[in-house]
Length: 433
Ligand code: SF4
Image 1 (cartoon, rainbow, N blue to C red):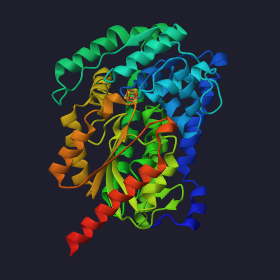
Image 2 (cartoon, rainbow, N blue to C red):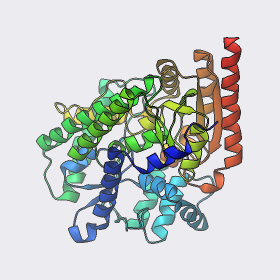
Image 3 (cartoon, rainbow, N blue to C red):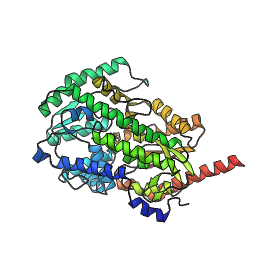
Image 4 (cartoon, protein in one colour):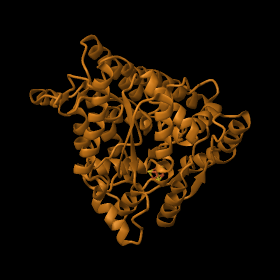
């Protein structure tokens, strides 16, 4: 059943203003990176989970996020070649595809997804280490570029909570290790007042982002909280947290979603709006980037709308109330790093997903397991069974990869998704008779 109608495809060509703004922001950031040889700005490579964007911006440093470069390359069909280049260099098939995409890109001249050059790092800032691959990735880049490396060790939330000792440990490293490294690379002194101003703007943007994501509790949901939300979280995941651009973007997005609610509309997809919300789903795991639109269409054609997802929390969990707090700048950065989804234990992830299924009145939940992400795919089947047990809603499962197109088997995945949704439909019919 096709719920995203053909005439509506034309409507998708007229993008929302917030989407145009988001695209321009991201493009501007790639231009800024490409201009670094002339501007003399300094590039700091860092990762999405636990990113310290406000702190970097307080020193006028330019954040460069290798995972974002990889996913953007995937969406633009450039990653397959990069991955195979890295394999020819000796990186095995099992290595995280993000890493191989980045290594292959560097090998081919470091031309990024927009066709512009990505600058070499002036500093490698490893501000989250919950995935061991992050460490190995920066070891490779350190070897390649000879750049200084700074590591912020973030203790794992094994017990499911942040203790004062954990916070103090992170703050001490920020003071003794990270800030001195940023002073060295930028040539500027740390200015806490400036950091606080940036953090205040982060909190404003976070308020609006949470409002948008929680709008999916409504029927019909005005947003898709996995596919479309990838665009929504883009600015806050990457280089814009703390900027006025981010505040303006999230305000505009919120107003657009509010207008959609007033009109009783469902989510917009690249093929037009979803008119008939047939299934409400929660999703664990990131989307596949190389066949992103094809995958989205498999869901939207069936009227399946994702109402909550964990991927949209890997750059920060805000829906449990956390906001960056300008009155305690370093402590709040520590809490942010410690609270990332990726820093939470399996039981905490199960709690979160079960809560989403219930709070967002989902019919079921799907796990998208990433073949080469050993850090987060491990344990997902166990999670699936436990969430089924707790919520009584059936779970679905499919596997592909992030940016390695060889692992996206469209026919298999379509089959899985359609069978799963059929089963949900039959359950519903059975319950009504
Ligand atoms: S292994 Fe997974 S979590 Fe680690 S860098 Fe790769 S995709 Fe990210």
